[in-house]
Amino acid sequence: MLASDSARKFSFNRLISNGDLVIVYERHDIMKAVTVSEGSVLQNRYGVFKHSDWLGKPFGSKMFSNKGGFVYLLAPTPELWTLVLSHRTQILYIADISFVVMYLEIVPGCLVLESGTGSGSLTTSLARAVAPTGHVYTFDFHEQRAGSARDDFERTGLGNLVTVGVRDIQGEGFPDEFTGLADAVFLDLPQPWLAIPSAAKMLKQDGTLCSFSPCIEQVQRSCEVLQISFTDIRTFEVLLRTYEVREEKLEDDGSNGSLPCKRKQCSDGGNLISSPISSVMARPCGEAKGHTGYLTFSRLRCL
Ligand SMILES: C[S@@+](CC[C@H](N)C(=O)[O-])C[C@H]1O[C@@H](n2cnc3c(N)ncnc32)[C@H](O)[C@@H]1O
Image (cartoon, rainbow, N blue to C red; front, side, top):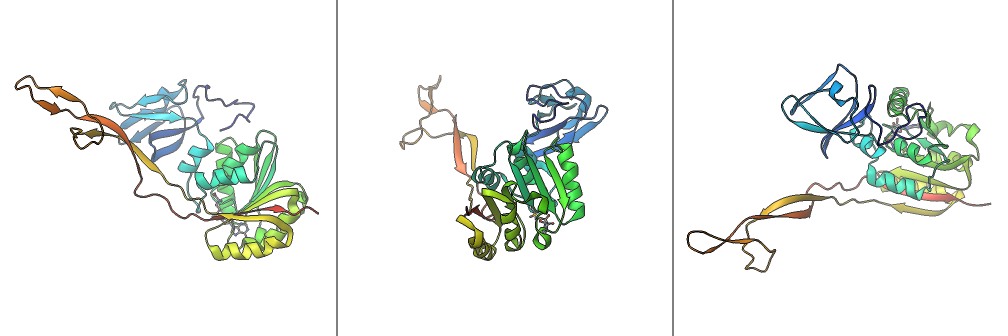
């Protein structure tokens, strides 16, 4: 997924080889992650696709099935992974993730602490942001969930950038070994206020913290605790408006002053008849995502 694996040297120009993870793209809302295995096939409504046909092709290739249907083979990125990963929990999506990475000032070389790991959706983007020299330590108290996340990070090539620990962060706090070392801490926990004193202890001077909570009551309780040792406390709700872009045929003759359209002369009577032309239209999606949660950011108060 990243140019951090020296053995496999990922690059978008690299050709697909056996064992690679590819994102099989049918439509923007139908994709799946597949590990290429010579001898295997992918079957979908468009037919049967032989993995052996994919070997040696560049990422982004359009591949045809036995029935002439096609899919695209995309290189895995955190953005795509968030859309295809298996949901073991609620996850953070792209709008919140991008805001978190930016606002927490996460750059290559950072040490980031996170809890809970959940499905690893945010962790994947945190890992790319700190690569190649930083590290993400992520903790979840659910052993099986932590194990599945660990497997996912290996599968996506992020194993060397992420360490998953099993720990009750609300009860025990982050491990003492990180005291004063973290550039940023991210919390997605049901009672984040319980973990905030430990997060403050882990942060470097001027370090940043973000807590994601779906309910405003959680935000209020967190802010009360944040005020003890943090400054610049700000809460955001990221609302995303998606537009559907599609080509539509227009039959209008233009007389109502709306969009222009082509006219052609008919061979029989010389009448002007409007001929359908197409235009690309963008309109807000009917089922736009609304509230996901509140992102509360703060900075450790300097002594
Ligand atoms: C909503 S999920 C996190 C989703 C994650 N941000 C993502 O993008 O995939 C919350 C996680 O917190 C974990 N959790 C809840 N309480 C915890 C605690 N006290 N210590 C550690 N993890 C906890 C849960 O097991 C769950 O996996």
